[in-house]
Length: 352
Image 1: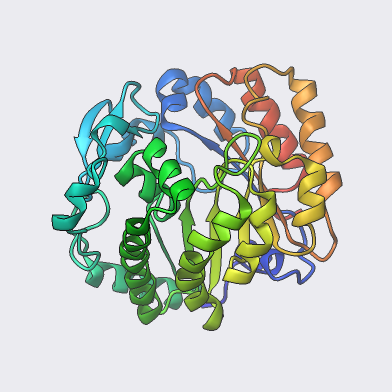
Image 2 (image 1 turned 45 degrees about the vertical axis):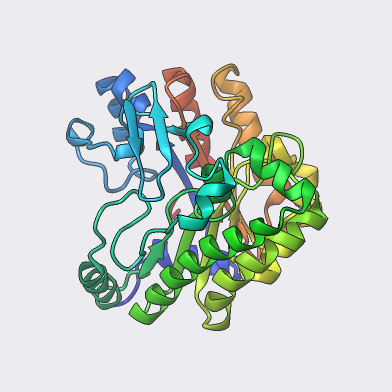
């Protein structure tokens, strides 16, 4: 079955093959649906170009993944997660990090990615294989993915953020063994998906802080470049696309990510700035720009529309390489959600 016009355009954008429009999406966090309900749905239904698959009443059938449910739980790695707000993402409890004390590392065993996922749920690779084959048969883009925080973040989930920073600064020798353990877990997942015939591999790992990298670019190249090279290089060598979401300031390592095989990077606009993204990314890698989530709650609708137009005008190339995405949390007023949708429709989001 031939691929849809929308999917073909998406691939052309990734490949800098002169797409017909800028792929652009809007997402509402589960907490926003919980807060606004029918009022949010009325906005979604008014913009079928952005939400082509949404059906009336669909939000009422929403099921939350474990990490978006209120309360505490422990994942397959022994990391304890805490969530105070239903519909928002949980965070790891640093003081309960399973490898906070290095003494625990000698007897620690990671989960088996062929049996369970990071959260501890059984993995049905047979079902995934069928889904990938079905996607191929019906003209889709067969894909696989990693859970959010699969490599760099997993290291500080296990050690605690402060301890991990100290490990890097002190050149802790056991850190290399810990990194290898997490890297090998992810390599096995990538190898399995490639074996099943995916054409894209996606993942999220928040590599930056608000205004800088958490460790120096030199330390990043020492400790982390080899990990992403081992994981994404497998995809690059087989012509498989890699989509990487990453919050925070990442400008100095974008060249590293490109070398490692990342096809599409999903950076935050505020942490990196348009000028920085022009310098390090425009025309060099496909940018799926995360529009200014910190602006959305406080700006006027007119300011939001101007922001989205400016992002489009600054990063657009007729050859492609630009996508736009907007995430709406429950602190974004309904009028601003509507303005985001109107601006996204104006600058991209679907066939003309």
